[in-house]
Image (cartoon, rainbow, N blue to C red; front, side):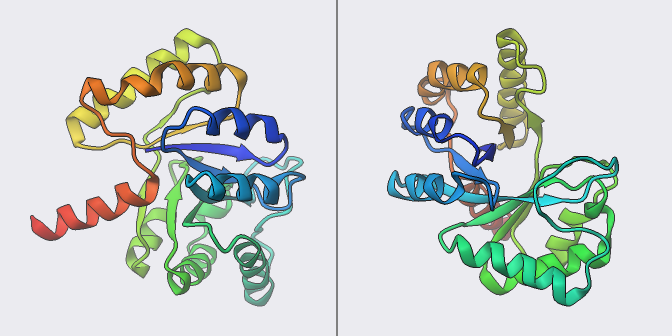
Length: 222
């Protein structure tokens, strides 16, 4: 499964990705200029919509309005509900930033309670090795997984290709793999050129929700 993060600032990026015609999970940042337009485009194209929820980072930085450690339970829930209510067709979320907040077990429990009540999944972007988000999600009964690979921390085409080969190796070894990419021109070009070939190489590209549900079925039969 491949998640495309950081969508919402330019519609042209998601339009180019949708034109590829392969199953991708599109993670839109709430309250960005084109978030709702892109969300509509994704749903109309029968692709998978996610929310890329901003969360507080360890290093203070300019960030979209998001979830922070100093929020009360009431304020936290209001923010989460506001985002989820605005995007009723979203199937799940992953964290945007969150190197600080995903270490906070109390706040992660509040988040997972909201996701559980709506039957939404959670993918930990793993912006810190100290995250407790996935563990909390699993304990709450939320379908969950963690990112295996960032495709494009280095936007060089050869670097992206190397990371993509790593994703395929992980999928061969483990039976599945989760990659996160971003709407960079280099990434879009690479995916357009390479995704149509993955099925002939013995891989199935799926929505994040399908991967998670298939893992549940697999675990239940073992």
